[in-house]
Image (cartoon, rainbow, N blue to C red; front, side):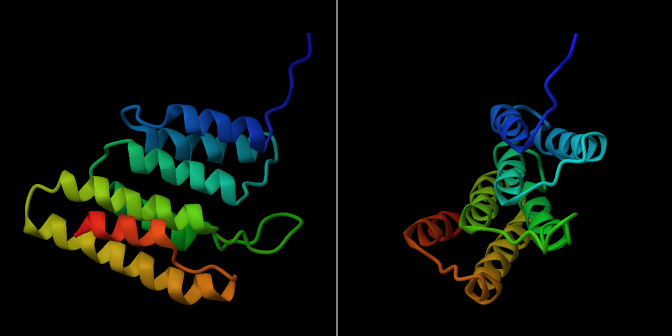
Length: 149
């Protein structure tokens, strides 16, 4: 019996389906790492947006900071057969949405400062690095920023 190999489309669907589940962020990271290794998948920007969505909707403390770490550390890596995987606008929006969710769950002022710092750094990264890729803040960006404050 032969099975179909997973691909980036099926991985994207699994990640999107797991959003909102407890510990969706760590699950998503593990899944992307395992499938990328086992099946030689090359994650693309929509996969990273779906992974960021797992952290955004996973209601995990520190989700906003983890989203920002993924945005800054994981995405600009060289992938097999191509150049760097650059984030697209939904990636930045997912980090800002995680800041909105994280702001609601802040236990104290220090947590709130961290979430606000992540939102500010994400916006600045979009304005600078995003501009190099032809991206610009839009009405959804500002809607999410207002939700953080």
